[in-house]
Length: 323
Image: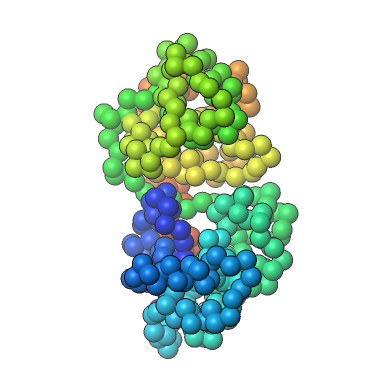
């Protein structure tokens, strides 16, 4: 049997992203460094392994606690790591896994570009059997594989009658208030029901602007808004070539997408009926946002972005192609 363990992150959006991993036989998603350990032991572990700038000795005493499954002769083991685990995997843990689970494969999946840029990629390529990242420019620059962000299927939770928001944006302002306000003003003037929720603002927003502001929007509240949205506004950072988490969420919750990612037309899931790209606010297709809403047919594409598709991809790369 082939057994996959994804050493991931515990953020709400990652838990949602990998929720369907439970439907894949032999695959688990682990968020804790030390599952089922006491708070005191976790604090000691943090002080020993996660806080020091330089690796302290005797870290190996923790290794058997990270993943305690007994080796089963004849089974194949794959361990997938997020960046979060780098203080552990960079200091001998991979050697321990390869010794304890002979023939195992170790994979690094970079889902955060800011974190990825802090890593020595040549070192990562030597440590792992396979390294992949969701952003294409970074993949090309470092000679690693591109793989899109994973997200599970939540379309069964969506009801057409609940879709009462024409256009939704929830996210950090990141110096984009002027752009967002321009989009908001243009579309509301055309009768579009826009609901914008901005956090981490670096400037004052007049109460009469119509835009909601908050220090933080909890993920469950954000998802509740997604379920009500007919269309979601997606804004990618400059000089990036990737589909964002917001794009994946939109597909998982049956929303149309209005995006400034003009390269989206080259994605295999692109559908002009449910995705519209713009280069500037003036180019936004207002009629696309206003047209009668129907739940998009996305069975094939939603399956391609799910955890099962990730496992199938790794099966092919690691075993059928013989990495």
